[in-house]
Length: 116
Length: 114
Image 1: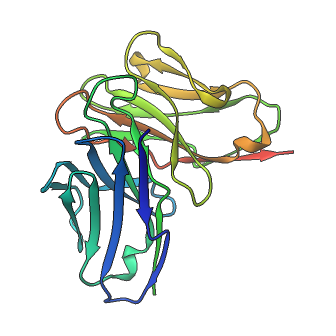
Image 2: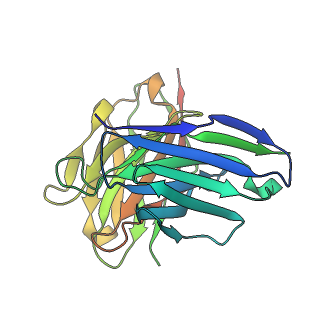
């Protein structure tokens, strides 16, 4: 069965420090991968999505970046964190194949980032 | 631009009462439609989805939703709410072709009174 892992689950970082959040999917190949940020009262904001290795689309101008070094790995990074980067970050995947699960977005458990 | 509107930020109902959460979308064509639920500090879990066919769809935990094309709506309903239904609910849409960007509403937080 397919599973999605995110880590770390919780992170407290000072302003100006770097960030790396990792997401890994198991049990599927060539998934579409997504990073969302959830801030209080703002719902889910799509940050990045990827349809394949090295293919990243950015939705929101910001100091965050994403990379997809392997088929089932998606990394969210920042060189220097801002206070406004605090939030709950969710990784998700969508199968690009057919079947009953097609076109359904499946989420990881999330990573809570607090920037102080 | 594509958008999803959930007009109710907070809803409070008594246990056993019926529930309806509203969702309206703006899209160039009929998209795929979803409802997700999120418990505090957790990821999102799919409740139900609409792709085509019967406009009344059944989901998990006793939830159902009705797609109304004329109103661009996809409201979520439950005939009798349980205390465990207290959570945040998100409506989402995605286009049928191209980039598969899933757009979410701002969510409705449900509180259930005992």
